[in-house]
Image (cartoon, rainbow, N blue to C red):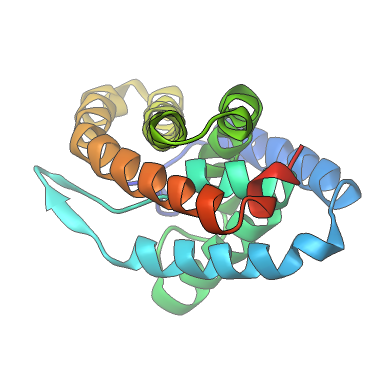
Length: 202
């Protein structure tokens, strides 16, 4: 459950999430490379579609997030790309909500930026199996960080949500494996056929 619906989180969490996302978006727009907009549009569409395919896991459900992949390819451009996809999902399909849009964006975009900053340099220097490993690590890290932020958002809103937050975090374990495989193989393939997509993102 990466999309927290409206009416769940407390006002302080909603306001803090909106403020943090606004700051990230302001920085992202200032640093936006207009030559990367086509890639951002493609990955935003991939994120949009992947999020619509949910698999039930216990009392919750999970879906591919792709934020590790988006962070490594897009860098700061991942923030507006994720925001636009989440906004469209909220408007057209009722996923998440408008009031909680800032928190949901933060929970997915911040891990994307962290993956880019922490693992991007190593991935760009790697090749072969090493690139597969770094890509897989980014996919898994993106899921772990998003799951942690979602659980933290719930826990900070009300102590009544703490049991649910723990369950939600546990459901991210199988997703971490799937996301690691998808991200690892995708990035390893891109480094072979179009390395400029990643090496240009410093």
